Each structure stands twice: as C-alpha cells, then as structure tokens.
Length: 619
Image 1 (cartoon, rainbow, N blue to C red):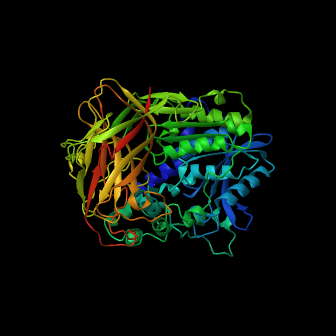
Image 2 (cartoon, one colour):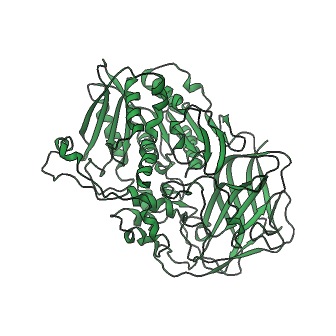
Image 3 (cartoon, rainbow, N blue to C red):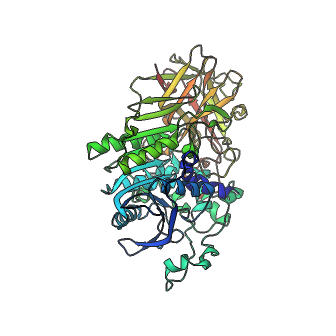
C-alpha cells in the first residue's frame, strides 16, 4: 500500500541507516525498552516517548533523539535493526510522538505549532535523567529532519549534534513555506498527498480520566486504532476537481490543515508565525545536512548550511557545519553504504560510492562519545555530479570557480514542441518574433518526475524522459547545439523571461533538461512563477494585455554534467499538473474558484527582451 510506503519513506527509511553496520558486527548490548513514558512540557501537555536502552551498560549514557508525527510505535525491519544497532553501540534511542500525534496529548495537530518549546523541553527532560550523560544528538529524515533544525534554533546547551536529512520543510525560505509553494504556485500533489495520508487533526485515545501511560502499555492499546487508516493516494481521485481547497474534504479525508496551507499567502502572516527556522535565527549545534537533487529542497538545504555557518554563535558550531547532496529522490540515500547502484526514476546514476552509514555513525561517535575518528576532516560540501556519476567536494557553496553564463532563447516564432525552431545560444538575439502558445487549464501539461515527495504517484519524483511532453504545442522548447565538450553545471539556476499574456494572471514554468545523444530528454531541475508575485509575495499584481513583463524563475540548484554529444534544453510552459495547481487565469484567488479563462501567453526574445537561462558553469 502506498501509505505504508510513505511511512517508510518519511519515518523508517532513516531508521535503516545502521543496517549495514549491523551486518558487520554484532551489538555489544541487548535492547531494553521502556514504552510510553509521559514527558511533561512547560504548558502541562505530556508527550509520549519510547526509550530503547543498552541493557547492562554502566554509567551515564548519551542519547539519540527522534521526534516524529508518524507514530513512534510503528515497526519495521529497518526500524528494529536501527534501534538494535545504535543501542548496541552504547546509545539510548529516544523516540517521541509530537504534540497532538498518536500517544501524545495536545491536539488538534497542526504542523509548525509549538515545535520549538516542545523540542527544547524534551531535550531538557532527557538531559536531567539519572541515566543521561547530558549529551543529546538528533537524527531522522523529512519531517524528522525538520524537527532537528527547529530544535537547533533554540540553541539548547545539551543538543550537541544533529543529522538533518531532507529538513527544509522546517525552514521558512522566502515564499517556500513547508516547500508547499514554488514562486507562489501551490505544490498541489505533494501537499495534498501528505495531508491526505498523514495530516489528520483527529487522533483517538483513552478518555481523560484514564492514565495514558498505563493504558498505552496495556494489551488493549495494541488493538486500538488511533487514526483513520487511509491511503495517501486517496486524494488523487479528486485531483481534477475545482475548487482545489475542497479536494481533501471531497475525497473523504479527516480534518487537516491543508485548507490553511492552500489559501494563505506564501510569505504571509499565517506561515510567518509558525515555529520553523528563519533567517534571523542563531545556531550553536554542529550539523551534518543531507539532501538529494530529486528531493523537494536541495537548494534550501544548501541555504540552510550557509545560514548555520553565518549565524553560529560559537566557533565550534561555525566550523562544524557539513552538507552532503546525493542524486536520489526523497530520503533514499539514508541507508547507503556505497555499494548501491542508483537509478533515479529512469536515469542511471551509477554506483553510489559514498558510505553514508559509516559517516553518520562516526558523526555520532565523535560528538557523543568523544571518539577522534576524523569525521570533521571531511570536506564541508560533498555533492554528487550527475552525468559524471561521481562525488565532488568543496568548502563553499556556490563553488568558488563558478562562471555564470547566459544561454539566450531564440527562434523564428515557432518554438512550440521539440519539433519547433527554438534554440539556446550564447549570442544575444537580434530582432525576433515572440513565441506564443495557448494555455487552457482544462488540458494542462502533465507532470512527469521532478523534485517532490509524498505525492503517492509512481512517477511523482525523479528523472524521466520528457520527450512525449515535448511534443505538445503548449510547451516551448529551446535546445542548444550538440556539445563538443562536456559542460558541468553546478550551483543555483535561474531563468529570466520576458512575457505577456491575454490573462490578468497566469503562470510560467521552466524546466532544465539534459538531452542524451539517443534523444532521451531527462528533467534536471524545474521552477515556477505566478505572475501576480513577479515583484514580491507581498504584492498582488495583475497583468495588462499587450504589456511585456520580466519573469524571474528560480530553478533552485543542481549539479549536472552535460557530456559531449549531449544538448542543453529548456522547456517553457504555463502548467505542470498535478505537481502544481492550475492557474485559472482569472486574477482571482484561484484556490476557491471553479471557472477558468483560456490564456494566450507569449515569450519574447530579442535585444530589447533578452530572455535567457542563467547557468552556473564550472570551468
């Protein structure tokens, strides 16, 4: 079932990070489990924690903490092996249900509410226990990664190390709250999918007069279902329905915070008040960030890595921020021991080649047990260069030898589809006719792969051949000449378009594509812009027919080698559905509308309007 797969991806996938190590050596200790320990927060709410401890260990012990919304009691082979391995190494593993989730009090559950105080109080409780040596590290991927970043903002003195994986839902990047928006365009499939499968505000438990700790330890609790058993993909049967604010309700989902996420401004007050990390926060925890090029937030992870250095309050913290970017989709790297052969979507990435399991274990041993194992001597930045299929390193991001190069869009006005005359050139265009296409929200360009998670779709994330999509006339295609020499593109990406529309508001999408010699066209990175936000998310601008506007589309970041014989390609359209919601072109709220307008959209490219793709070329 897809919901089971989601839970594994968002919680238990990280739990297998010690599996390879477990095969090599038997643990020194057996596991002793103390279930459902109720830990009181400062406001009187109690959170439920399971403690997995090394039986027979003497002295005070360090702790690895995981805070989860997915249910601490969920079992899997990966989870059991992780706990056994880490406990066998001498760690206490503490897993706690977040506020309003499963065994913990404090509902209704809403993402981002109360996280800082709860995280701080949880570490304080652990550090004060007679079995604790006062050192607490954190681990986990996805939501369990973002809880680590949120905790790090509190600068708890006992939080000595973190490994935040795919953690950017815990960072409020500009216009990217919870990575639910891109350029003001709502990430529909990802956000609806997550709330559909995991976002229920309703969690059932014993009545208030019953002792929760005793009840959850009882045999009766094992048979008790706390949340509705719901497949993540169940939202998808309603994905075409309008208005999109009603999609989850119409699919039979329990109450969630989806409606607030879809209806609020991406940089507005609702998101600003939530407990996510912000640019103003300070840090004092050594962190090893991990992410991947086909996940939803590698650019934001790299921003976070820079921010953690710039805003560290101590030299120890500033000098011990590291980041690793793999080529995979969501959290798939977390069990890698270097022997895997990675195929991401349909694109062969070769052998993994990096033993992440060993790096993570050595990270914890260094900061929790004072083991001098050289882990902090590794490069500050390690990234997988796709196309070359090898690991590269740097001490800075963007790379010091970055040469930003403009690839100008050109055509004779017929760039529609890959059979058109669109091209990319290093030469500034002269006077050329604009390219135009019809965007009809009733027949949007279909999404295929990309940088997402949690959609429930088999092809929701990763690299796939875009050739069929490029046959559509509502997709403009601009392609470079065949490369005689390879081209490394590593760093932040941007597309600058000069556009006009018959509609009051519309979207523009841009997709960077690597065209192989055999014609396969793999998506590398993409981005979107809702034109009403072209100047700022605080503005709600409209377009006037006949006027030309500049549209700057953030393509986030990548590391891709376009080899000899390959071509660089840029796709431009006004939709990518169901990854993004469809702009209905009315100029209205969009999320609560059911009627749409067909738009004629234009991309201008000339000396006056030099539309271009800006690539970070590594010389």
